[in-house]
Image (tube, rainbow, N blue to C red):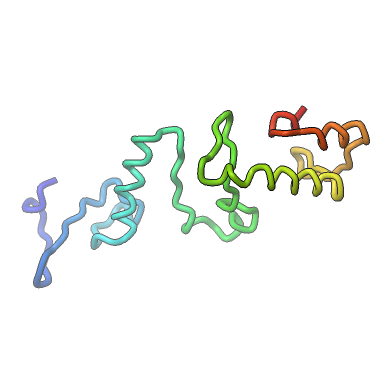
Length: 136
């Protein structure tokens, strides 16, 4: 859309930055000043195109209940067969903490119900060296 085709009204002195609201995550149906969110929207769109398997979400507009459930507060160290370079150096220490927590407090099933593992599974757990070993 050509900015000259629109009536922008009185413009402040200095440089005016026009922003077409299509594709903006803020006030999608209304014209608005170019803001930090519009700037970041550009980076988000680039990220979604360049890495389609890495989702990007705006979490600041989620309901408070979503945060109470822990959304956005989980950072993976391993995703599938790939190690996340930034966090994987902490994996060995985290694995030992998880093992201790499972032995002391039990594990949770998919329904978030806690249960204690039988002795044979606890012995297997202590021998685990990676995520795959823990799930077996």
